[in-house]
Image (cartoon, rainbow, N blue to C red; front, side, top):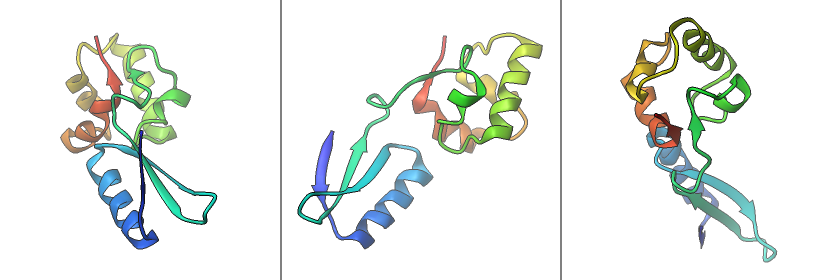
Length: 110
């Protein structure tokens, strides 16, 4: 886990890029010295979600997946069986290539 000290404006801009690209998960906190700290977790260090076993509560931990989309993923899986690969998620209404690119680093697939 990398720890760096940056001005708050830089952190907000960096966090925006992180959220848009889905490359990393960042945590912002204040240090004992009053400095703002940005801790970045690479996807490998973040929790992997198994798309064939996850319930809606676990799926909403993925970036850009809310309760409605999580329910659609589970419903699709119940109706069509397990996902064979991450790209199969594009069959779920609301998930396209862009959203798949954001969540794919956090997926555990068969």
